[in-house]
Length: 160
Image (cartoon, rainbow, N blue to C red; front, side, top):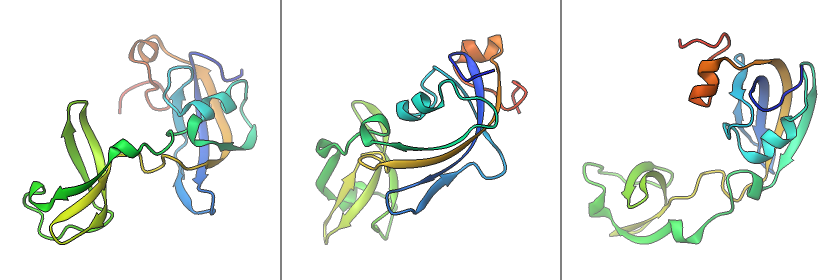
């Protein structure tokens, strides 16, 4: 059986950046995902199409097929510190949920001044080339419930 639309693929993976730093990995538990439903970044889904159990491969995914390029309009300078109520020490690397017209999104503080900070609302992996090391460990038909919900439910197709 090969990975195609409406199949659940189970993969072991490790993800490194261009410098070889480990960003994420499946470790002991393989990632189960429903193929063809945008559960994964587009570039990774393309690479997995047609693969079968036992296939091992590496894939380098450009930002356009990953988390997108860095968008300058999501970076805001001069945000008053007073907007972060209840936080005494604002530090670079802190993440906050920010409310905007588009809904809630995550921002990271990238610069701290005396009165203001700079926040970046881009995905932390935006603009980065992603290097995946992948092993396919399972492929199965999706259940009707999974197809209805648009994502895989664990290994056996039930909620934990």
